[in-house]
Image 1: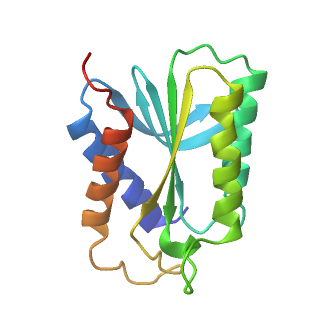
Image 2 (image 1 turned 135 degrees about the vertical axis):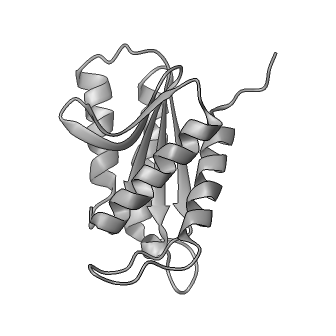
Length: 158
Protein backbone atom coordinates (compact mmCIF):
# COMPACT_ATOMS: atom_id res chain seq x y z
CA UNK A 1 0.00 0.00 0.00
CA UNK A 2 1.10 3.57 -0.53
CA UNK A 3 1.45 6.55 1.77
CA UNK A 4 -2.22 7.54 1.57
CA UNK A 5 -3.41 3.98 2.22
CA UNK A 6 -1.10 3.86 5.25
CA UNK A 7 -2.61 7.14 6.48
CA UNK A 8 -6.11 5.70 6.05
CA UNK A 9 -5.08 2.58 8.02
CA UNK A 10 -3.60 4.75 10.79
CA UNK A 11 -6.75 6.89 10.95
CA UNK A 12 -8.94 3.79 11.02
CA UNK A 13 -6.83 2.32 13.83
CA UNK A 14 -7.24 5.55 15.83
CA UNK A 15 -10.99 5.79 15.15
CA UNK A 16 -11.47 2.20 16.24
CA UNK A 17 -9.37 2.80 19.36
CA UNK A 18 -11.75 5.63 20.30
CA UNK A 19 -14.80 3.41 19.79
CA UNK A 20 -13.49 0.08 21.07
CA UNK A 21 -11.06 1.05 23.79
CA UNK A 22 -11.11 -2.43 25.32
CA UNK A 23 -8.84 -3.51 22.45
CA UNK A 24 -5.16 -2.74 21.86
CA UNK A 25 -4.95 -1.41 18.29
CA UNK A 26 -2.07 -1.72 15.84
CA UNK A 27 -1.37 -1.67 12.15
CA UNK A 28 0.53 -4.40 10.30
CA UNK A 29 0.17 -7.33 12.70
CA UNK A 30 0.89 -10.80 11.36
CA UNK A 31 -1.44 -13.77 11.43
CA UNK A 32 0.83 -16.59 10.36
CA UNK A 33 2.93 -15.03 7.62
CA UNK A 34 0.16 -12.69 6.49
CA UNK A 35 0.24 -9.03 7.53
CA UNK A 36 -3.16 -7.64 8.50
CA UNK A 37 -3.70 -3.90 7.99
CA UNK A 38 -5.46 -3.03 11.27
CA UNK A 39 -5.76 -5.34 14.28
CA UNK A 40 -7.57 -4.97 17.57
CA UNK A 41 -6.19 -7.32 20.22
CA UNK A 42 -8.98 -8.24 22.58
CA UNK A 43 -12.16 -10.28 22.66
CA UNK A 44 -12.98 -10.74 19.90
CA UNK A 45 -9.73 -10.38 17.99
CA UNK A 46 -10.52 -7.88 15.21
CA UNK A 47 -8.78 -8.22 11.85
CA UNK A 48 -9.39 -5.47 9.29
CA UNK A 49 -8.08 -5.92 5.77
CA UNK A 50 -8.09 -2.71 3.75
CA UNK A 51 -8.53 -3.52 0.07
CA UNK A 52 -7.26 -0.45 -1.74
CA UNK A 53 -6.47 -1.38 -5.35
CA UNK A 54 -5.40 -4.97 -5.05
CA UNK A 55 -5.65 -7.01 -8.24
CA UNK A 56 -6.85 -10.04 -6.28
CA UNK A 57 -8.42 -9.13 -2.92
CA UNK A 58 -9.61 -12.69 -2.40
CA UNK A 59 -5.96 -13.66 -1.91
CA UNK A 60 -5.92 -11.82 1.44
CA UNK A 61 -9.05 -13.64 2.55
CA UNK A 62 -7.72 -17.01 1.41
CA UNK A 63 -4.37 -16.53 3.19
CA UNK A 64 -6.05 -15.56 6.46
CA UNK A 65 -8.51 -18.44 6.10
CA UNK A 66 -5.61 -20.84 5.52
CA UNK A 67 -3.70 -19.59 8.56
CA UNK A 68 -6.77 -19.82 10.78
CA UNK A 69 -7.29 -23.44 9.65
CA UNK A 70 -3.74 -24.79 9.21
CA UNK A 71 -2.22 -23.08 12.22
CA UNK A 72 -5.06 -24.36 14.41
CA UNK A 73 -5.66 -20.82 15.56
CA UNK A 74 -6.98 -20.94 19.10
CA UNK A 75 -7.05 -17.30 20.00
CA UNK A 76 -10.74 -17.23 20.87
CA UNK A 77 -13.32 -15.39 18.85
CA UNK A 78 -12.17 -13.62 15.65
CA UNK A 79 -14.00 -11.01 13.61
CA UNK A 80 -12.62 -10.49 10.11
CA UNK A 81 -13.61 -7.29 8.31
CA UNK A 82 -12.73 -6.75 4.68
CA UNK A 83 -12.95 -3.05 3.86
CA UNK A 84 -13.14 -2.43 0.11
CA UNK A 85 -12.41 0.96 -1.44
CA UNK A 86 -14.67 2.19 -4.22
CA UNK A 87 -12.06 0.92 -6.66
CA UNK A 88 -14.12 -2.30 -6.65
CA UNK A 89 -17.43 -0.57 -7.49
CA UNK A 90 -18.75 -0.86 -11.02
CA UNK A 91 -19.92 2.27 -12.81
CA UNK A 92 -23.02 0.36 -13.91
CA UNK A 93 -23.81 -0.53 -10.27
CA UNK A 94 -22.81 -3.43 -8.11
CA UNK A 95 -19.28 -4.58 -7.44
CA UNK A 96 -16.52 -6.16 -9.48
CA UNK A 97 -16.07 -9.90 -9.67
CA UNK A 98 -12.80 -9.38 -7.75
CA UNK A 99 -14.76 -8.13 -4.74
CA UNK A 100 -17.53 -10.69 -5.22
CA UNK A 101 -14.94 -13.49 -5.20
CA UNK A 102 -13.32 -12.13 -2.04
CA UNK A 103 -16.69 -11.91 -0.29
CA UNK A 104 -17.60 -15.42 -1.45
CA UNK A 105 -14.47 -16.78 0.22
CA UNK A 106 -14.89 -14.58 3.29
CA UNK A 107 -18.43 -15.77 3.89
CA UNK A 108 -17.20 -19.37 3.89
CA UNK A 109 -14.62 -18.81 6.63
CA UNK A 110 -17.21 -18.89 9.46
CA UNK A 111 -18.69 -22.07 7.95
CA UNK A 112 -15.36 -23.84 8.43
CA UNK A 113 -13.64 -22.17 11.39
CA UNK A 114 -15.42 -21.97 14.73
CA UNK A 115 -15.72 -18.60 16.43
CA UNK A 116 -14.94 -16.60 13.28
CA UNK A 117 -17.25 -14.00 11.76
CA UNK A 118 -16.83 -12.06 8.52
CA UNK A 119 -18.09 -8.63 7.50
CA UNK A 120 -17.49 -7.00 4.11
CA UNK A 121 -17.83 -3.19 4.04
CA UNK A 122 -17.28 -0.40 1.56
CA UNK A 123 -14.91 2.45 2.36
CA UNK A 124 -16.38 5.38 0.44
CA UNK A 125 -13.03 6.44 -0.99
CA UNK A 126 -11.90 6.37 -4.59
CA UNK A 127 -8.20 5.70 -4.10
CA UNK A 128 -6.00 7.99 -6.16
CA UNK A 129 -3.27 6.54 -8.29
CA UNK A 130 0.23 6.93 -6.93
CA UNK A 131 0.94 10.60 -6.28
CA UNK A 132 -2.68 11.67 -6.85
CA UNK A 133 -4.63 14.03 -4.61
CA UNK A 134 -6.43 12.68 -1.58
CA UNK A 135 -10.18 12.76 -2.25
CA UNK A 136 -12.44 15.05 -0.26
CA UNK A 137 -14.32 13.36 2.54
CA UNK A 138 -11.87 10.53 3.12
CA UNK A 139 -11.65 11.15 6.89
CA UNK A 140 -15.45 11.05 7.16
CA UNK A 141 -15.44 7.81 5.18
CA UNK A 142 -12.95 6.31 7.66
CA UNK A 143 -15.12 7.42 10.61
CA UNK A 144 -18.18 5.87 8.96
CA UNK A 145 -16.28 2.60 8.45
CA UNK A 146 -15.10 2.60 12.08
CA UNK A 147 -18.69 3.08 13.24
CA UNK A 148 -19.88 0.16 11.08
CA UNK A 149 -17.06 -2.06 12.32
CA UNK A 150 -17.98 -1.20 15.91
CA UNK A 151 -21.63 -2.08 15.21
CA UNK A 152 -20.62 -5.37 13.58
CA UNK A 153 -18.64 -6.56 16.59
CA UNK A 154 -20.73 -5.24 19.46
CA UNK A 155 -23.27 -7.66 20.80
CA UNK A 156 -26.51 -6.65 22.42
CA UNK A 157 -26.23 -6.94 26.18
CA UNK A 158 -28.11 -10.00 27.38
